[in-house]
Amino acid sequence: MLVLLQTGCALPPLKGRSQTQAFTQEQTAMTRLGGAVAGQTTNHPGLSGIVPLENPLDAFVARALLAEASDTSLDVQYYIWRDDITGKLLLYSLYRAAERGVRVRLLLDDNGIAGMDDSLVALNHHDNVEVRLFNPFVIRSSRVLGYLTDFGRLNHRMHNKSFTADNQATIIGGRNIADEYFGVGSGALFSDLDVLAIGPVVDRVSQDFDRYWASESSYPADRLLSAAGDGDLDELETSLAAVEQNAEARRFVAALHNSDFLKALLDGEVSFVWAPVEMVSDDPAKAQGLEEEQGLMSQQLALALGEPQKTVTLVSPYFVPGNLGVELFRDLENAGVEVRILTNSLEANDVALVHSGYAKYREALLEAGVELFELRKFRSENEDERDSSGGIVGSSAASLHAKTFAVDGETLFVGSFNFDPRSANLNTELGFLIRSPELANALESAFPGQVRLAAYEVILDEEGELRWLEFNGAETVEHRHEPNIGPFKRALVYLFSLLPVEPLL
Image 1 (tube, helix red, strand yellow):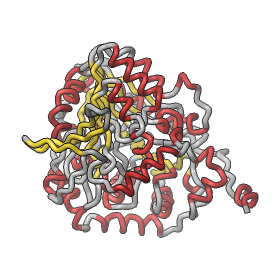
Image 2 (cartoon, rainbow, N blue to C red):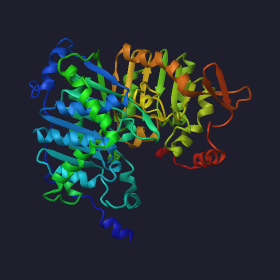
Image 3 (cartoon, rainbow, N blue to C red):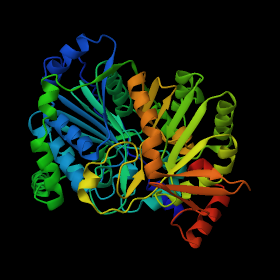
Image 4 (tube, helix red, strand yellow):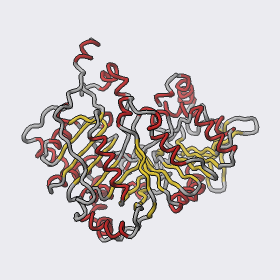
């Protein structure tokens, strides 16, 4: 059976695959976005304009309205795209752009698109759309079989996230395209962070997209999925349009209609923070295990940041520092650098296995002098509270998903990179290093107040035992075990920590 599976799981050839590149910023200078951006970039030569997108509804609206504003091209790259309300609404925005004559290139990691095959093959049938799947599974019905026969290849994933219109404006950050990233539903929602950018860094994102689009891991969807029928595209358009009538979707449709973001952007009235911005990303060859160590994004970040002098404030939902990471933070503390880290508590973490990889390093981190905080899971069902959430810690039912850090009050990183072995060694990643005291200080100054309200502070007591401090107004509650977690799950996490799987986390 294994021999048959292996012989039947060969990837299709790439010969004859179309070759396209991003339009240059000169070619799109006369588009609506090009005209709106030109006056601002001229006044800030060499700098890029940045707007943080903390609120989930704002993050959705910004993407949808960029699609609406596009005149020539949309280059869209994501790790996860769900077949849910926000996924369908944004897919519909791509379809409508294609109907206006906009060229749409959609590059998706094949591990995060469960249930999307029919929609993607239909969309790919549009004359102005091309869909490619990164590092794909040949067997579509069962991904498990693919992992059994080709684990070494399929264990590498494209974790990059970008949404670029006309090579004039882009959104990058931590959010995938799914309801939980945009505040929809009653389950655990993700607190996340993106940035909208204009200026020269957008062209670097487009060049990087081209690098992934043309890589040996990007396969045209029609070579892997069943062929679309003549009526499939019409059926897709009908089904996507119908989503707007969903009660939950109406919030997003209303937000789009009521938003003045697009008008403000096209009128040059959006307040950007102007700063030198460096794009850092992995070579797509990393997905094939071919990237040199010095080219890894983790190495690029280390070189670009140099040696911190005063402060490091790190936010990472999946945090597995390993022994080398602990040594790094210990050396920083010994050099007089204040290190503060926020990650998910076990109750807020959506991947208990990853938490087990982090938990065994807590004591060593605290002994090194690191200030350690774990996000609490809030259970309010207040819809308005969810919608108005902002900041890195979000609000109700939040699980941390933002990946950001600030160094010395001078530099801010925003992107897809988690501080764990998977981001460092297996998945490809993308992010911005923003040399902006204004934005770096915004994170550092907001950290103490926001975190005290929304997270447990983890400490060692006089006997060297772990304790979790929960601050509720004037009251401080001390927990002796992982808060709001029963003994069975605590035992399970401990057993997970004994497994030799840390390099995969």
